[in-house]
Image (tube, rainbow, N blue to C red):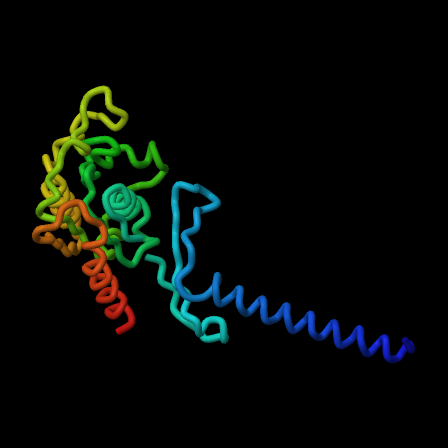
Length: 220
């Protein structure tokens, strides 16, 4: 093969490979980077997982608002309301679903039942003014009445004095948490879901409504 012809052939092959690579990259972006993603584990702590929805327009360079949603149900509700207590300045809203063990804003009891020892335990002082700026939703089913999982007993891993004082059932304990937050000046939307037991999926429409309302108010 003549040198010039060989050069042209190699150049054509390189262009084809580049086109295939670009097509593969576009397909990979459409599958993995845009739209609903898989669930990822946090590198910092693999106990925490997250999923994303990336609007397809992002792949074309469109600018969008970034929404990180701190909603938690059951054990996730424990995390959501305790994160709000410790780091209210990092949030513009919090949704707390069906927490079985609640941390009341009680300055006379230690963590996790109260908040007396936050400075010693976490190096953080409770900031009621910052928490009061965070709209909070609390929701639970009125049929979520099982107590075997949330009744703490001496010798248990989470036992401490006052562990069961907020109430017997999840609705009772979440009512106590709402009252504690409201006493500190927090605006709480309390949703008691009729006929619902410990079912996360049935809470999601109310959570979406709450977050959409807060987001609309912030944008307004």
